[in-house]
Image 1: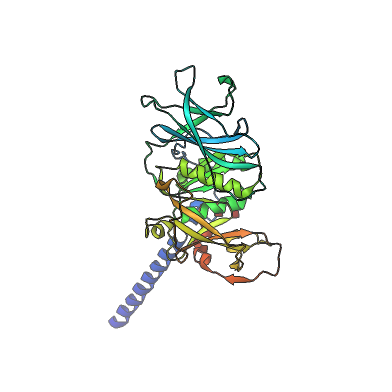
Image 2: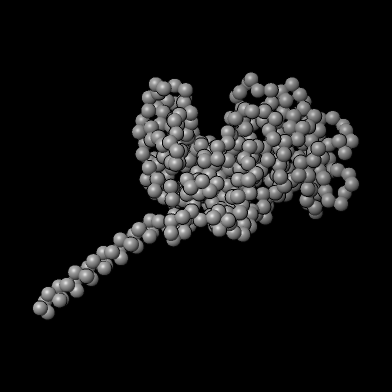
Length: 393
């Protein structure tokens, strides 16, 4: 009888340990869901997730496209102790500025600097506006200017638009990777899913160049920033034209200058583009393999018909096998300051970028790529995706 009693206790012990291990595994798998649902499985109130916002990074004065004599200037940066660099668009038929003027705090008048310009590589001859860098050098080392103006003709100082300067010389390195998002079409689900996925692979800081994101959503993200452990910044983008490729190049250059000193690497994406590490689930671990900046192959996936209650990036695993659809995107080492540097090392076997687009051609040849699928479980369980699926956003 004693043997049966011992056998019974052994069976109970084995069952108890097994149940405990199963419970522990399921608890860990539901880690993200528990942030959104209370114990009884009902959606929690969105206000319960809101917390004190994280202290946001200082990205300098808010940039804005301002009209000059024959073009536009968006932003300006102190890149050396005695030199300013500005991002500009110049009318082909117009004159390049001849003079730059520096503004100092406490001075009623401007100081004339030494102007020069360089045209960015741009092959679209149909455009009437051409991208430029404007430079303004000065000799005063005692004080730092707070703004710059450019002009091709003599005019009164009150008539010269000021571009406020961003000074990145004293920035503290806070991030491994920062993502800058070029303005494109807006979709609420794509917006939230983009942030959720890239946060999941290790990007915590996002700079959105914004012309269409609803204020309600930008305010919501700031309210959730502490809980989600993300920093989101929305920079105005009142670009005078609708050329998406030129917009992206301008954003990429502004992003590289603006994030200098804040991060090790920086990438410019659109809302429908996802960085996919091939070997690990961490972008940071993949990037640390090399010190160079990288050229990433872009794969385009058609999403003509969408399923409700499923992230867009999980709805198609067939990318278009056509070179006209699949291009290259760079992850830059922030310290380089140079988007024209061709020393990139291709790491196509370690990372790629998946882009989700609407396709007009139904007869495209495709290739299967399931690399996104291994992120699917954790992706669906992220806080923002759960809020979307349960109608809380």
